[in-house]
Length: 345
Image (cartoon, rainbow, N blue to C red; front, side, top):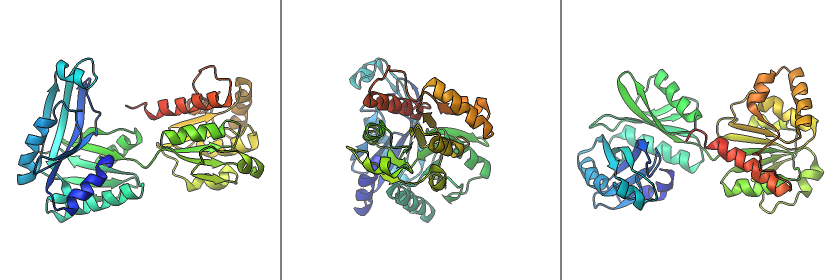
């Protein structure tokens, strides 16, 4: 839904009533993933997509009822093999779409407040979750922050905990609570890559990470390395401090990834001591197997178990593509990071 923000804002400025349709579940070769969104106006205008063209016509027609009457409903559609071929799939599947009058168009102050806060979060790159009760005839949306505070319809703490777990798994999905179903739509901040060390592959890794829309921060206390690395594409920030001095400033959660590259134990271990206990999705460390074996012993002396080290650190860093050059090593690293990022999809 984030990509629909300009259209949503324009339609609201024009006082144009509209409905929101979102894919909440899929079976088989779905044309669009869970969370895909479309808005539909009372003039049958549309923006976005829920199926790449297979069922949009039916959704547009169904949306007219909710635009005029309010509320929402779960609608199931089958995608035939013939229709699937037209959108590049080898076979069909099924999708479930929840269609509701858009929250800011309902006239309910509570639901307008939910949209106002969601809009602010999207504009400011602030993580949040939109939790929607999947009940026929109702518009019940709640915006939940990662600190578990919320705006909108009241949610029990146990349900909020379930929603936060969906957030940590980096996916959208339906949860059940006390015989009701809720759709948890995750709106994370940009993925963040922390690169420890302005090493020989850092410039190439920064360029690749920016290509995949990561926010990239390079941390290296060695001023000569940080200042003299020739970046073809500049990182978002370069910090000339030891990792332990700055890592606590960052949100170390499931949308954070780290590449430890300095090849200097004083710097690498300084970072890993903070990164290992955190909830990062990926931590990779540069070095040969021999180098990593020494690293393991040092980390064990700091109190980390060998099992935790093996589970959390990808070392030698990156996918095995027989990389030889710095650019190829950087490619192997971004490949491993993207693989980890997409693990739940």
